[in-house]
Image (cartoon, rainbow, N blue to C red):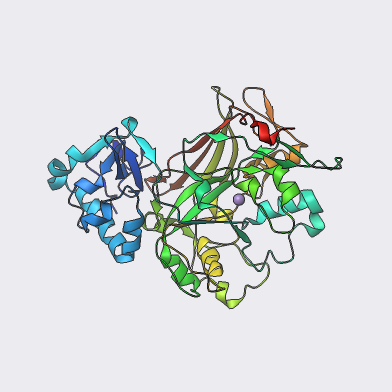
Length: 413
Ligand code: MN
Protein backbone atom coordinates (compact mmCIF):
# COMPACT_ATOMS: atom_id res chain seq x y z
CA UNK A 1 0.00 0.00 0.00
CA UNK A 2 1.40 3.42 -0.89
CA UNK A 3 1.42 5.95 1.86
CA UNK A 4 -0.70 9.04 1.37
CA UNK A 5 1.51 12.14 1.04
CA UNK A 6 0.74 15.84 1.29
CA UNK A 7 1.69 18.36 -1.39
CA UNK A 8 3.24 20.34 1.48
CA UNK A 9 6.90 19.45 0.92
CA UNK A 10 7.94 19.71 4.57
CA UNK A 11 5.20 17.21 5.49
CA UNK A 12 6.88 14.16 3.93
CA UNK A 13 5.66 11.28 6.03
CA UNK A 14 8.94 9.77 7.19
CA UNK A 15 10.67 13.07 7.84
CA UNK A 16 8.46 15.07 10.19
CA UNK A 17 6.19 14.84 13.23
CA UNK A 18 3.21 16.33 11.40
CA UNK A 19 2.58 14.35 8.19
CA UNK A 20 -0.90 14.14 6.66
CA UNK A 21 -1.55 11.04 8.79
CA UNK A 22 -1.40 13.23 11.93
CA UNK A 23 -3.31 16.53 11.40
CA UNK A 24 -3.36 17.61 15.07
CA UNK A 25 -5.44 20.56 16.24
CA UNK A 26 -4.12 23.66 18.00
CA UNK A 27 -4.58 27.38 18.48
CA UNK A 28 -1.98 29.82 17.19
CA UNK A 29 -1.25 33.54 17.02
CA UNK A 30 0.91 34.93 14.23
CA UNK A 31 0.63 38.46 15.62
CA UNK A 32 -2.76 39.13 14.07
CA UNK A 33 -4.88 37.33 16.66
CA UNK A 34 -5.54 33.84 18.05
CA UNK A 35 -7.07 31.32 15.63
CA UNK A 36 -7.62 27.59 15.28
CA UNK A 37 -4.92 25.75 13.34
CA UNK A 38 -3.91 22.33 12.03
CA UNK A 39 -0.24 21.32 11.96
CA UNK A 40 1.08 20.10 8.60
CA UNK A 41 4.83 19.77 8.08
CA UNK A 42 6.49 23.02 9.11
CA UNK A 43 3.23 24.97 8.78
CA UNK A 44 0.02 25.73 10.61
CA UNK A 45 -3.07 25.65 8.43
CA UNK A 46 -5.39 28.55 9.27
CA UNK A 47 -8.33 26.18 9.22
CA UNK A 48 -11.08 28.74 9.82
CA UNK A 49 -10.25 30.44 6.52
CA UNK A 50 -10.47 27.44 4.21
CA UNK A 51 -13.40 25.46 2.84
CA UNK A 52 -13.49 23.04 5.81
CA UNK A 53 -17.06 21.87 5.22
CA UNK A 54 -18.36 22.47 8.77
CA UNK A 55 -20.51 25.29 10.19
CA UNK A 56 -18.25 28.39 10.37
CA UNK A 57 -19.61 29.14 13.85
CA UNK A 58 -17.53 26.19 15.13
CA UNK A 59 -14.41 28.22 14.28
CA UNK A 60 -15.54 31.54 15.73
CA UNK A 61 -13.68 31.21 19.06
CA UNK A 62 -9.97 30.28 19.28
CA UNK A 63 -10.57 26.90 20.98
CA UNK A 64 -11.55 23.44 19.74
CA UNK A 65 -14.44 22.98 22.22
CA UNK A 66 -17.16 23.84 19.67
CA UNK A 67 -15.83 21.33 17.15
CA UNK A 68 -15.64 18.73 19.92
CA UNK A 69 -19.23 19.43 20.91
CA UNK A 70 -20.33 18.89 17.29
CA UNK A 71 -19.64 15.17 17.78
CA UNK A 72 -17.83 12.21 16.22
CA UNK A 73 -19.55 12.47 12.83
CA UNK A 74 -18.33 16.07 12.44
CA UNK A 75 -14.85 15.04 13.66
CA UNK A 76 -14.65 12.40 10.92
CA UNK A 77 -15.96 14.78 8.25
CA UNK A 78 -13.40 17.47 9.12
CA UNK A 79 -10.51 15.00 9.12
CA UNK A 80 -11.55 13.55 5.76
CA UNK A 81 -11.90 17.03 4.28
CA UNK A 82 -8.48 18.16 5.56
CA UNK A 83 -6.90 14.97 4.19
CA UNK A 84 -8.36 15.70 0.73
CA UNK A 85 -7.42 19.37 0.74
CA UNK A 86 -3.83 18.71 1.81
CA UNK A 87 -3.12 15.70 -0.42
CA UNK A 88 -4.99 16.48 -3.66
CA UNK A 89 -2.96 18.99 -5.68
CA UNK A 90 -6.15 20.35 -7.21
CA UNK A 91 -6.72 22.20 -3.92
CA UNK A 92 -3.19 23.53 -3.51
CA UNK A 93 -3.83 26.98 -4.99
CA UNK A 94 -6.80 27.59 -2.71
CA UNK A 95 -5.23 26.23 0.47
CA UNK A 96 -1.57 27.26 0.25
CA UNK A 97 -2.17 30.99 1.01
CA UNK A 98 -3.53 29.88 4.41
CA UNK A 99 -0.39 28.01 5.51
CA UNK A 100 1.46 29.99 8.17
CA UNK A 101 5.10 29.08 8.96
CA UNK A 102 5.14 27.40 12.37
CA UNK A 103 8.40 29.15 13.24
CA UNK A 104 6.58 32.49 13.25
CA UNK A 105 3.63 31.67 15.51
CA UNK A 106 2.97 31.38 19.21
CA UNK A 107 1.00 28.28 20.15
CA UNK A 108 -1.75 28.87 22.71
CA UNK A 109 -4.06 26.63 24.74
CA UNK A 110 -5.78 24.42 22.14
CA UNK A 111 -9.05 24.15 24.09
CA UNK A 112 -10.75 25.49 27.16
CA UNK A 113 -10.24 23.01 29.98
CA UNK A 114 -13.62 22.75 31.70
CA UNK A 115 -12.60 20.26 34.39
CA UNK A 116 -9.42 18.36 35.21
CA UNK A 117 -9.01 14.99 36.88
CA UNK A 118 -5.69 13.27 37.46
CA UNK A 119 -5.32 9.53 37.87
CA UNK A 120 -2.73 7.21 39.40
CA UNK A 121 -3.01 4.40 36.90
CA UNK A 122 0.59 3.42 36.09
CA UNK A 123 1.42 0.07 37.72
CA UNK A 124 5.18 0.63 37.79
CA UNK A 125 4.84 4.18 39.15
CA UNK A 126 2.42 3.15 41.89
CA UNK A 127 4.67 0.22 42.80
CA UNK A 128 7.82 2.36 42.91
CA UNK A 129 6.24 5.11 45.02
CA UNK A 130 4.56 2.57 47.30
CA UNK A 131 7.84 0.72 47.78
CA UNK A 132 9.59 3.95 48.79
CA UNK A 133 6.96 4.81 51.40
CA UNK A 134 5.61 1.45 52.57
CA UNK A 135 8.07 -1.21 51.41
CA UNK A 136 7.70 -3.63 48.48
CA UNK A 137 5.38 -5.95 50.43
CA UNK A 138 2.62 -3.35 50.74
CA UNK A 139 3.57 -1.21 47.74
CA UNK A 140 0.19 -1.21 45.98
CA UNK A 141 -2.75 0.11 48.00
CA UNK A 142 -5.42 -2.61 48.48
CA UNK A 143 -7.82 -0.94 46.01
CA UNK A 144 -5.25 -0.30 43.28
CA UNK A 145 -5.84 -3.41 41.14
CA UNK A 146 -9.61 -2.82 41.20
CA UNK A 147 -10.05 0.95 40.83
CA UNK A 148 -8.38 3.50 38.54
CA UNK A 149 -7.58 5.84 41.48
CA UNK A 150 -7.91 9.56 40.82
CA UNK A 151 -8.50 12.95 42.38
CA UNK A 152 -10.30 16.04 41.14
CA UNK A 153 -7.72 18.63 40.09
CA UNK A 154 -8.04 22.24 39.02
CA UNK A 155 -8.84 23.19 35.41
CA UNK A 156 -7.35 26.61 36.19
CA UNK A 157 -3.93 25.03 36.76
CA UNK A 158 -3.59 23.79 33.16
CA UNK A 159 -1.22 25.83 30.97
CA UNK A 160 0.17 25.34 27.48
CA UNK A 161 3.74 24.31 26.68
CA UNK A 162 6.22 27.17 27.01
CA UNK A 163 4.53 28.76 30.02
CA UNK A 164 7.11 29.27 32.81
CA UNK A 165 6.40 27.47 36.08
CA UNK A 166 7.15 29.32 39.32
CA UNK A 167 8.45 27.22 42.20
CA UNK A 168 5.63 27.07 44.75
CA UNK A 169 5.64 28.01 48.41
CA UNK A 170 3.80 25.68 50.74
CA UNK A 171 3.51 24.03 54.11
CA UNK A 172 6.22 21.47 54.62
CA UNK A 173 7.27 19.40 57.59
CA UNK A 174 10.29 17.14 57.62
CA UNK A 175 10.19 13.85 59.53
CA UNK A 176 12.38 15.30 62.30
CA UNK A 177 10.51 18.59 62.61
CA UNK A 178 7.88 19.10 65.31
CA UNK A 179 5.91 21.75 63.43
CA UNK A 180 5.37 22.69 59.79
CA UNK A 181 7.12 25.62 58.10
CA UNK A 182 6.05 27.76 55.13
CA UNK A 183 8.83 27.48 52.56
CA UNK A 184 9.56 27.20 48.83
CA UNK A 185 9.21 23.59 47.75
CA UNK A 186 12.63 21.93 47.86
CA UNK A 187 11.37 18.74 46.20
CA UNK A 188 9.68 20.09 43.07
CA UNK A 189 9.16 17.36 40.49
CA UNK A 190 7.64 16.47 37.13
CA UNK A 191 5.22 13.70 36.22
CA UNK A 192 5.25 12.26 32.69
CA UNK A 193 1.62 11.70 31.71
CA UNK A 194 -0.77 11.66 28.79
CA UNK A 195 -3.93 13.75 28.88
CA UNK A 196 -7.16 12.46 27.34
CA UNK A 197 -9.63 15.13 26.20
CA UNK A 198 -13.32 14.39 26.58
CA UNK A 199 -15.10 15.63 23.45
CA UNK A 200 -18.67 14.62 24.25
CA UNK A 201 -20.74 15.22 27.38
CA UNK A 202 -22.34 12.45 29.42
CA UNK A 203 -25.17 12.12 31.87
CA UNK A 204 -25.20 9.02 34.00
CA UNK A 205 -23.01 5.95 33.76
CA UNK A 206 -21.29 5.05 30.47
CA UNK A 207 -19.62 1.83 29.30
CA UNK A 208 -15.92 1.61 28.48
CA UNK A 209 -16.85 1.34 24.77
CA UNK A 210 -18.99 4.50 24.97
CA UNK A 211 -16.25 6.27 26.96
CA UNK A 212 -13.76 5.54 24.19
CA UNK A 213 -16.16 7.08 21.65
CA UNK A 214 -16.38 10.24 23.82
CA UNK A 215 -12.61 10.88 23.73
CA UNK A 216 -11.60 13.47 21.13
CA UNK A 217 -7.83 13.22 21.38
CA UNK A 218 -4.69 13.16 23.46
CA UNK A 219 -1.94 15.54 24.58
CA UNK A 220 1.28 15.13 26.57
CA UNK A 221 0.83 16.28 30.15
CA UNK A 222 3.29 17.24 32.88
CA UNK A 223 1.69 17.16 36.31
CA UNK A 224 4.22 19.32 38.21
CA UNK A 225 4.32 18.05 41.78
CA UNK A 226 5.78 19.45 45.00
CA UNK A 227 6.70 16.25 46.84
CA UNK A 228 7.46 17.92 50.19
CA UNK A 229 4.14 19.79 50.22
CA UNK A 230 2.38 16.60 49.10
CA UNK A 231 3.95 14.46 51.85
CA UNK A 232 2.56 16.71 54.62
CA UNK A 233 -0.86 17.53 53.14
CA UNK A 234 -2.08 14.40 51.37
CA UNK A 235 -3.59 12.35 54.16
CA UNK A 236 -6.49 11.72 54.33
CA UNK A 237 -7.93 13.46 51.22
CA UNK A 238 -5.13 13.25 48.68
CA UNK A 239 -3.10 15.87 46.81
CA UNK A 240 -4.22 19.50 46.97
CA UNK A 241 -1.71 22.39 46.80
CA UNK A 242 1.14 20.03 45.84
CA UNK A 243 -0.44 19.62 42.40
CA UNK A 244 -2.13 23.00 41.94
CA UNK A 245 0.82 25.15 40.83
CA UNK A 246 0.65 24.19 37.18
CA UNK A 247 -0.10 21.33 34.80
CA UNK A 248 1.53 21.75 31.38
CA UNK A 249 0.05 20.25 28.21
CA UNK A 250 1.52 19.99 24.71
CA UNK A 251 0.03 22.46 22.22
CA UNK A 252 -1.43 20.01 19.66
CA UNK A 253 -4.43 17.76 20.22
CA UNK A 254 -3.53 14.51 18.47
CA UNK A 255 -6.88 13.03 17.51
CA UNK A 256 -8.01 9.55 18.39
CA UNK A 257 -8.42 8.99 14.64
CA UNK A 258 -4.70 9.62 14.04
CA UNK A 259 -3.81 7.18 16.82
CA UNK A 260 -6.04 4.29 15.62
CA UNK A 261 -3.14 2.31 14.02
CA UNK A 262 -1.28 2.36 17.35
CA UNK A 263 -3.90 0.74 19.60
CA UNK A 264 -2.57 -1.88 22.02
CA UNK A 265 -4.28 -3.75 24.85
CA UNK A 266 -3.77 -2.99 28.52
CA UNK A 267 -1.55 -5.55 30.29
CA UNK A 268 -2.97 -8.80 31.69
CA UNK A 269 -5.16 -8.20 34.71
CA UNK A 270 -3.59 -9.29 37.97
CA UNK A 271 -7.03 -9.32 39.57
CA UNK A 272 -10.22 -9.61 37.48
CA UNK A 273 -11.95 -6.27 36.98
CA UNK A 274 -15.61 -5.71 37.76
CA UNK A 275 -17.70 -5.98 34.57
CA UNK A 276 -18.25 -2.21 34.18
CA UNK A 277 -14.46 -1.73 33.75
CA UNK A 278 -13.82 -4.50 31.22
CA UNK A 279 -12.56 -3.37 27.82
CA UNK A 280 -14.20 -4.52 24.58
CA UNK A 281 -10.91 -4.11 22.65
CA UNK A 282 -7.44 -2.54 22.80
CA UNK A 283 -7.76 0.92 24.37
CA UNK A 284 -4.16 1.96 25.03
CA UNK A 285 -1.74 3.30 22.41
CA UNK A 286 1.90 2.56 21.72
CA UNK A 287 3.33 6.07 21.98
CA UNK A 288 7.05 6.37 22.64
CA UNK A 289 7.71 8.96 25.36
CA UNK A 290 10.80 10.73 26.62
CA UNK A 291 11.70 13.33 29.23
CA UNK A 292 14.55 15.81 28.73
CA UNK A 293 16.06 17.99 31.46
CA UNK A 294 18.24 20.99 30.52
CA UNK A 295 19.83 23.15 33.23
CA UNK A 296 19.31 26.85 32.42
CA UNK A 297 20.82 27.52 28.98
CA UNK A 298 22.74 24.24 28.93
CA UNK A 299 22.68 20.95 27.05
CA UNK A 300 19.74 18.64 27.75
CA UNK A 301 19.90 15.09 29.08
CA UNK A 302 17.22 12.50 28.28
CA UNK A 303 16.37 11.29 31.78
CA UNK A 304 13.58 8.85 30.90
CA UNK A 305 12.25 6.78 27.98
CA UNK A 306 9.06 4.74 28.13
CA UNK A 307 5.72 4.18 26.34
CA UNK A 308 2.09 5.02 27.05
CA UNK A 309 1.41 1.29 26.60
CA UNK A 310 2.87 0.71 30.08
CA UNK A 311 -0.34 1.99 31.74
CA UNK A 312 -2.47 -0.50 33.66
CA UNK A 313 -5.75 1.33 32.98
CA UNK A 314 -6.73 3.05 29.71
CA UNK A 315 -8.27 6.52 29.49
CA UNK A 316 -11.54 4.88 28.41
CA UNK A 317 -11.57 2.81 31.61
CA UNK A 318 -10.79 5.90 33.67
CA UNK A 319 -13.57 7.83 32.00
CA UNK A 320 -16.07 4.97 32.47
CA UNK A 321 -15.09 4.77 36.15
CA UNK A 322 -15.44 8.55 36.47
CA UNK A 323 -19.10 8.29 35.40
CA UNK A 324 -19.87 5.22 37.55
CA UNK A 325 -21.38 7.32 40.34
CA UNK A 326 -23.51 9.23 37.86
CA UNK A 327 -20.95 12.05 37.64
CA UNK A 328 -21.60 14.09 34.47
CA UNK A 329 -18.70 14.77 32.15
CA UNK A 330 -18.38 17.92 30.06
CA UNK A 331 -16.87 18.81 26.69
CA UNK A 332 -13.31 19.90 27.43
CA UNK A 333 -12.85 17.65 30.48
CA UNK A 334 -9.18 16.67 30.76
CA UNK A 335 -8.10 13.34 32.27
CA UNK A 336 -4.46 12.92 33.30
CA UNK A 337 -3.33 9.30 32.90
CA UNK A 338 -1.18 9.19 36.01
CA UNK A 339 2.59 9.02 35.88
CA UNK A 340 3.83 6.69 33.16
CA UNK A 341 6.80 4.64 34.27
CA UNK A 342 8.23 1.63 32.49
CA UNK A 343 9.41 -1.54 34.20
CA UNK A 344 13.07 -0.46 34.14
CA UNK A 345 14.90 2.31 35.94
CA UNK A 346 15.49 4.15 32.59
CA UNK A 347 11.73 4.38 32.08
CA UNK A 348 10.70 6.06 35.33
CA UNK A 349 8.42 9.04 34.75
CA UNK A 350 9.29 11.25 37.74
CA UNK A 351 12.42 12.43 39.54
CA UNK A 352 10.97 11.00 42.74
CA UNK A 353 11.44 7.55 41.20
CA UNK A 354 14.52 8.28 39.07
CA UNK A 355 16.41 9.62 42.10
CA UNK A 356 14.66 7.24 44.50
CA UNK A 357 13.41 9.94 46.86
CA UNK A 358 16.74 11.81 46.81
CA UNK A 359 18.83 8.76 47.72
CA UNK A 360 20.28 8.16 44.23
CA UNK A 361 20.70 11.55 42.46
CA UNK A 362 20.88 11.51 38.67
CA UNK A 363 24.00 12.68 36.89
CA UNK A 364 23.32 14.91 33.87
CA UNK A 365 25.48 15.28 30.76
CA UNK A 366 26.71 18.60 32.14
CA UNK A 367 28.13 16.75 35.17
CA UNK A 368 25.54 18.30 37.48
CA UNK A 369 23.36 16.07 39.63
CA UNK A 370 19.63 16.25 40.33
CA UNK A 371 17.35 14.74 42.93
CA UNK A 372 14.62 17.29 42.23
CA UNK A 373 14.23 20.30 39.91
CA UNK A 374 16.38 23.42 40.34
CA UNK A 375 15.53 26.98 39.34
CA UNK A 376 16.23 27.53 35.66
CA UNK A 377 15.77 23.85 34.73
CA UNK A 378 13.86 23.36 31.50
CA UNK A 379 11.79 20.19 31.32
CA UNK A 380 10.52 18.82 28.01
CA UNK A 381 8.22 15.87 27.38
CA UNK A 382 8.15 14.40 23.87
CA UNK A 383 5.92 11.77 22.32
CA UNK A 384 6.00 9.95 18.99
CA UNK A 385 3.94 7.06 17.66
CA UNK A 386 6.13 5.33 15.07
CA UNK A 387 4.12 4.01 12.11
CA UNK A 388 5.13 2.13 9.00
CA UNK A 389 6.90 4.85 7.00
CA UNK A 390 5.59 7.75 9.04
CA UNK A 391 5.44 9.07 12.58
CA UNK A 392 2.82 10.89 14.64
CA UNK A 393 4.38 13.56 16.85
CA UNK A 394 2.78 15.52 19.68
CA UNK A 395 4.98 18.64 19.76
CA UNK A 396 7.11 19.51 22.78
CA UNK A 397 5.55 19.90 26.22
CA UNK A 398 7.99 22.29 27.88
CA UNK A 399 8.25 24.37 31.01
CA UNK A 400 11.10 26.22 32.71
CA UNK A 401 11.29 26.59 36.48
CA UNK A 402 11.36 30.16 37.78
CA UNK A 403 12.50 30.93 41.35
CA UNK A 404 9.85 31.18 44.07
CA UNK A 405 8.31 34.64 44.45
CA UNK A 406 9.28 36.97 47.32
CA UNK A 407 6.73 36.54 50.07
CA UNK A 408 4.45 39.46 50.86
CA UNK A 409 4.85 40.97 54.35
CA UNK A 410 1.60 39.49 55.67
CA UNK A 411 2.91 35.97 55.01
CA UNK A 412 6.16 36.52 56.92
CA UNK A 413 6.80 36.71 60.64
MN1 MN B 1 -0.15 13.00 38.41
